[in-house]
Structure formats: structure tokens, C-alpha cells
Length: 102
Image 1: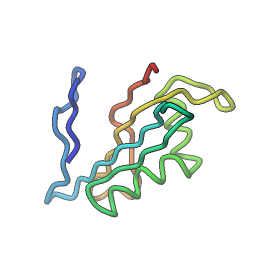
Image 2 (image 1 turned 60 degrees about the vertical axis):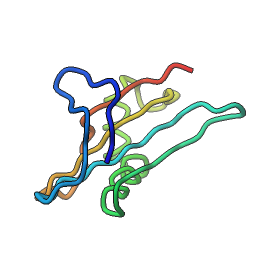
Image 3 (image 1 turned 90 degrees about the vertical axis):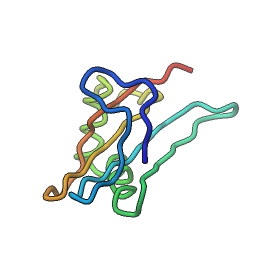
Image 4 (image 1 turned 30 degrees about the vertical axis):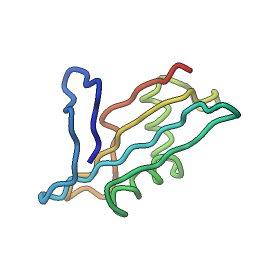
């Protein structure tokens, strides 16, 4: 289960895996005291795979750059993104993103 504490228009305040086959995952690149941490989270292995694919595939990275408004080759800012996989789909799509200001 993923709780959205500050939902924007069109976003839910709660995302959880459903019996209809929807899966959600969170990927976040956040500052820490001495560097940066990358967090990948899903409610189960299948949903965690979506977060991994986001940061490890060309398609996922292109979506990430587009969602964050950066160009390929630019430094990726700190971020949080929510990805979703519908039952019939073979890929995950970004459904919400946030820039994180340290």
C-alpha cells in the first residue's frame, strides 16, 4: 500500500494492489546527509519490478526524464515517482511524479 500524503488533482490518496491486477511501485532519489539514496518500493515482487524497470530500461528512463522535465544527459534532480501496471499491460507507466527540493 502506498499513501499519497499530498494528492494533486486526479491523484488518489491511497494506492494498493488490487484483485483486478493493478500494481503500484514507488521510486525515489532523495538527498541524505552524506550523498544520495535511491529507494525502490513495491507491495510485492511484481510491483517492485516496475520501479526497477523505471531506472534500468531505456523506455523507463525516457519516461522518467520526460516526467521530471529534464533532457537526456542532464543531471536528474531529486524525485519521487509512482508507477502503475495494469493487469493486461506488460509495462509500467508513471502516473505521478514530484521533484524533491533538499
